[in-house]
Length: 187
Image 1 (cartoon, rainbow, N blue to C red):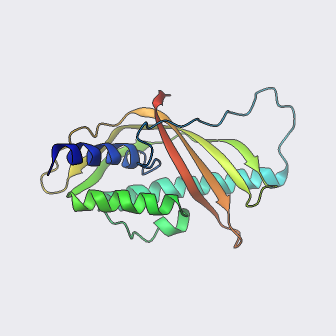
Image 2: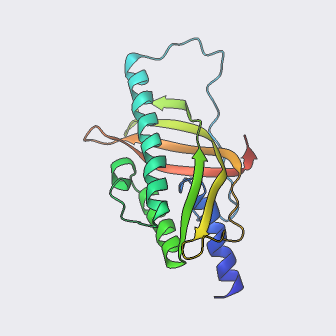
Image 3: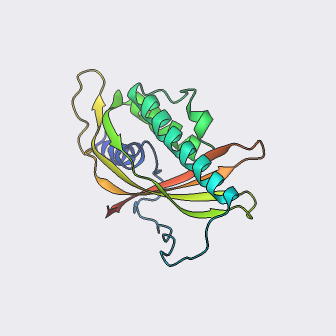
């Protein structure tokens, strides 16, 4: 394998799979602007519909992280839970990342810690969305070669900001449709 290709593969897996594939590999800079958190001085109380959307979006996000971890443990890009919590374009990016890990004989092990919160709710949009911000701790989450459990070089995890968008689909389900890891923004 060429060194450049190996480094790019490892970088993509680190960016994409460290956070349960929260980020993709399309942006070589690895940075995107994070949504601004809700101002603390916002006196308006959320409506019951907004609170219900927040709960549903956070449940979808937790399901997405768990499904991604399960699929990454065995490098199974067709893991059935992925479609239960993810939608395109993120679903395809996650599957490609997991498929690449499988192609290189790698799997994920360890623990990924998450502390998500909702930063914005837009029920008037078409489609309705909820923005989520998370502090992901991937310091104990490793990409290893399945054959001998050696850590893939350059795959050490960090504690960093991650963002995701939950979208409500016409059938009423909330699915995570996009996400990004902001490894340049520790938390």
